[in-house]
Image 1 (spheres, rainbow, N blue to C red):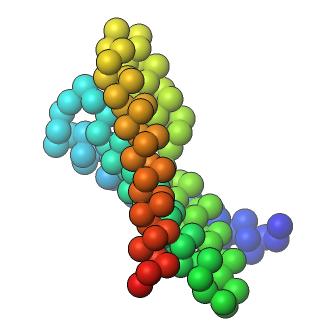
Image 2 (cartoon, one colour):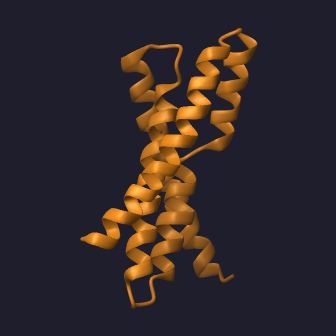
Length: 126
């Protein structure tokens, strides 16, 4: 761990967090729903981007460690959010919206894993 690595992750995290905020607020304002579409969308997009970057990096023979730190650890780490996902499920359950919580949790997990796989597959085949 070096100061450079920390700054690379921090820069990616800053950009990812800002992108998450702008995206999720915009989506939630447009859809005005009890379903947390903003967080759902950014988490799935983040899973896909992570898959693309990982797939590309695993095929690249050059040293891409700074790119991986910036995009995967930094940007995707800042863009996606487990804590908000957990809190939104807590709120859904508190408001007795159990079915919505189950759909949200299950679809987030299934589609998230699927999109990581699709991202890796695409990156390895282009």
